[in-house]
Length: 275
Image (cartoon, rainbow, N blue to C red; front, side, top):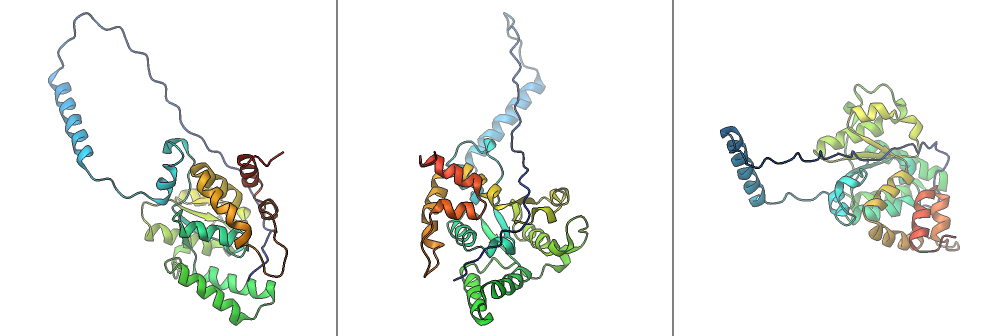
């Protein structure tokens, strides 16, 4: 079992979430006699009525993972964006805490996980180096991930690097995987989760319609959409992250070690265990 995580990546936790507030103008005094609607107004009213009737009869389109979980937490417009599709960078996927947490959430339908052959190569090389594990065993573990998520490997993404300039070139392959995902998953919200926030140029990603999160940002956003379901996943995390031959660690210890400080505060507050 893989046991080590990379925690020396830089973090940038700046984000602003909010919503627009509209002001409804107060109504004017009504005249004692109501004027008849003009022909144009009548036509508009009839068209609106027809559209409303058609909308009522139309079947509902399938919910995305984001919409499905948002339905548990209130009106969607009050919630920050969470991804339907998530490109998991190597430094997150290699964590023995974040990997089982995110992949169990993916299995439960929170999002579709994505990686590329390059991310797979990085994962195998890093794991073999950090854990002094034979490459054959590492390859078997990576193959098991492919079996669990056969659609996750997005394939060759080299041509999606074209035009990238402002992010760190060594991470262009991660952005390329996200760009490929926007093609494979049209009309979906695609994001990258990484610890290497400083290596990605936010404006460049925004211009491509992509979101960028560090793990703590991502998990706190998921919490805002469905805290009760995420609590259930977190409660199981110490068991799934346990390394045979070592003492079990509490959830608080695991979350703090992974720098999930905001998520830990939310969980501890929700369970009444925070001082």
